[in-house]
Length: 312
Image (cartoon, rainbow, N blue to C red; front, side, top):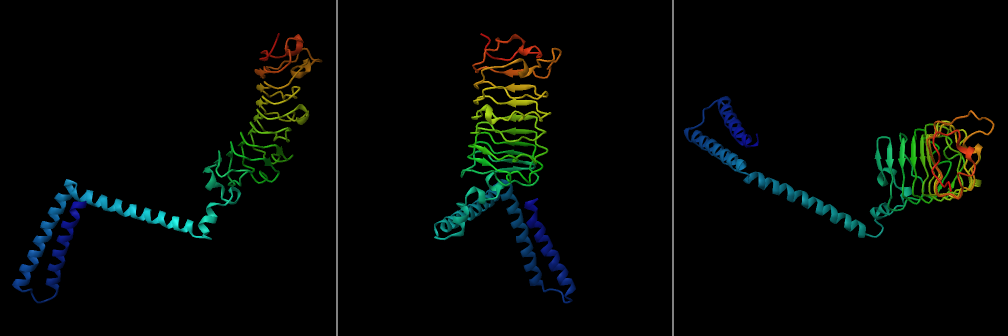
């Protein structure tokens, strides 16, 4: 289509001149007519030459090079301008670029997609929970340097369904920090520095606190009792001395590599109900603990599978 532009322009020019001559009243002189015809011939010849050059790639290459050079020059000028602004004392640009993470919009530091925020290994270091867009349902803030979770961090984030804070430096979580998250189903606090657990949302289906510093005194007796939808519970590689209360809904239980020294009939079964069965609990890991699982043969009679661990 592009090679036809100039012939069309030439034709329009000729028609315009002809109509102008007709409307103007007096006819053009013979010399003027010859001049116009020569102009038209040159325009047609020029358009034909342009078409041939374009089809051969000569003109398109020239245009491409011109555009490329223009863009390159603009980018170069922009970079140069930024460099000069950076070097200028008191530049507003400099102060904007060195703002701490908490003063920058979250979606400049993280990847924000519809309903999901990914803040993984943020640089400069992220030490607090970032402010989130209101529609956020999934937060992944792994491998940062978050140290504490307060009650205000998630107070207005009622849409959250999954929070993954794996690999931070969290040593304290205020009670009530997750209490308003009525839709939260999955929570991972693995690979942190927790010594006690906060109150957990009732609708959790998966909770992961592997690789922390939890002791039995830091896990309340009813910490999981009200979690009637909990299916996966991961508490491996901590310092627990006993098995906490496990809800009936749990299917997968990981307690390996703790300091558990004893399990009894009431740990998983019921000593006062010999007919009690627990078919849902299909995976139990107690390996890496001092406890000898064969010490009390009646301990696992209500289970469909034996726990993984030491039997002799």
